Image (cartoon, rainbow, N blue to C red):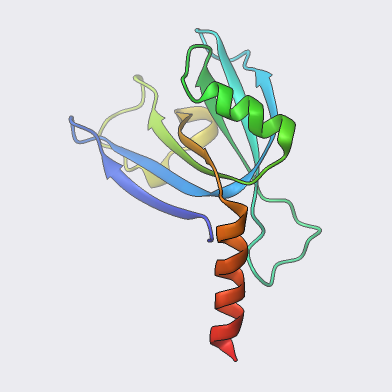
Length: 137
């Protein structure tokens, strides 16, 4: 599965970005930019088919210290197992509501938060890859 991205709107009509994909949690580190205690979950994304292995695709999402997904992230970091992740980028309160999310600098103008994280059944992944290869024959 390739990383997917789509734009949604919150209850006040402000756009936000959602991305989802598969990868491995490579680090959980304290985030010094947040006013509340948060951790940065660094995720190495699954390499798109046909792309060079020398290019690393990564993403980062914040997780609050009391986030119920934090134990999943910690276990994934230790095990190195493949996870399905979802991150949402919501604009900071000082960013005007009328600006489309596509014109914002995601690092400076938004907060990316992990909203979904679960282990991928590797047996299922292998069978899907095998099925895909067989279907191309």
